[in-house]
Image (cartoon, rainbow, N blue to C red):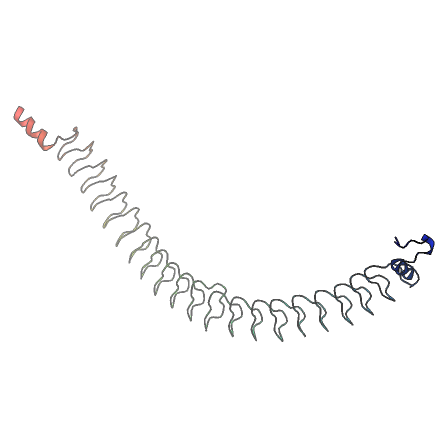
Amino acid sequence: MCHVKKRRENCFHPHDLLAQFALHSGVTDGGARPRTGVTHVEARPRTGVTDGRARPRTGVTDGGARPRTRVIDGGARPRAGVTNAGARPRTGVTDGGARPRTGVTDGGARPRAGVTNAGTTPRAGVTDATNAGTTPRPGVTDGGAGPRAGVTNGGARPRAGVTDGGAGSRARVTDGGAGSRARVTDGEARPQARVTDCETRPRARVTDGEARPRAGVTDGGAGSRARVTDGETRSRAGVTDGGARPGAAVTEGRARPCARCRGMLSVRE
């Protein structure tokens, strides 16, 4: 409203003049700072731009975030001659991954020259490092955990001349189990030399042994001793069936007294 003390119909405020000018300037919808010949404008349009966004430039149809000249699809900082720009693309690279290098088609983790698909720290002379374990070596086609030269399929610490090594296999073992020794054809848990079929900690010259068998024992129970055919708990030599702590040459007896008790019994007798 005009603050001059005149009649309202004779008051001409500058804002009223701008409003009347906007009605007769050929602008249909006037936004922020409209200009001549622009149908619909947003923030700061310029001449010759049909749809103006944030700072469009001449000759750009659709302006995104800071587009440049002759860029079809502008991503993060595109450069000239790059179709799809990834992270820091370089000249002559079609699809730039993580630090690609010259002459590498598919760049993985730290690829090197002459390596198609690089795994974990590949080295020269390795054709396929995809299935490479920890630190493969030259001349190894398929390396497992710590493979060595001349080993086709290496398990845990295989050694030379072993085709298929299990856990802790030794030399001259065809098929070794856990902790197998030399000259063992089929061994389970810690077999020893000249044992054909054994279980837990067998000894020499034992065909079928259980817990801690001794020499000359065919079938030993828990804690069996030598020359015992069928023994129970802590059987002793010359005892066929031993009960609780039997003594020597005792077939069935109770608990053996100690030395002091035996002395007292002899005095009483």
